[in-house]
Length: 416
Image (cartoon, rainbow, N blue to C red; front, side, top):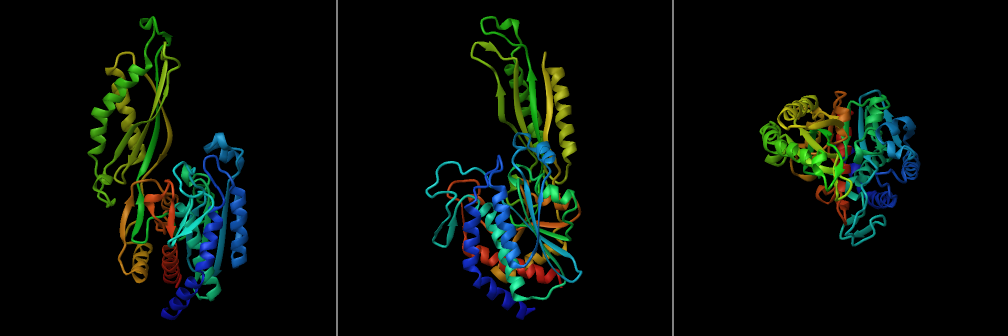
């Protein structure tokens, strides 16, 4: 094993220029989501590169009706999933995933977000950390293994998928639900950083709360029912009665922040309604973002809110309200004692000399799609989480090299 690792480490270091070029190429595709731009172009690039390395490649286009189901406003933007495999023997399958979509660039950049800049050992650009750096690292690891002719028993499987930034249903969700991939182990290369492994994530339920009144002229408000006022009454009750009850629920897992262990509710992230200053509003709506800890289910969180609203309707005269569930998924956690987690810890310690922490991610991750199918799955990848989604996003080049070495060790340990 030592000789194999030395050979792999050397090859991964030799691939540093390849790694830098690949990430720069990927950042240059402005795969902004929404709506889902340049997906075809980046998947053609990835498929070509993976074939050159020597992997078996398939590109799976998501049916338009499936895209329309989840993203009706963007149904004319095709979605593609790239799957690549390299097999030796009939052992288990270890799967590495990365999403190629990025959030909009936004403002405040000192460099062009889609013309990568290399400076002081970092690569700057939108998606550098989240998570085209992870994709690049996976590819570098696979290329090193193929070119080093390392023996193993099983299959190395890669997937590069769209739409993580909008829920992942047409990306990882699609290839898992359709049985296109059925791995034994899965590693999602989101930018946790080298010293942190996410073993799971919170769940969520997103609601739209619609409040109905009766529109009237602003000069005769007594002839109408002010939907805004009813909405404010309901939101006040939620803030002072429901929110403390929810936040009293604590998880047993480590989240990296004591506050992260709480179940949470965010009221009013989006608010819409009203027509004009001199019109009594007949409609208002507001959103609720309810984060679910592993000790409860998303269904329980939904029922808790619906029961509260039914109670509020009896206490607020004239309240007419409708609840829409916009998204819902349970928390998902891989037991930290499982072989995948322990292998990742061991391999990381060998490379970086530090034992990484294992925590549950406060946000949502595509990893959950594997976990609900009872696949051992973790989220572990290079990058700087704090620069994701902000201006001047970057990644350290050396972190990609180190993570590629960790991934290679995981392959050799799990596919003995």
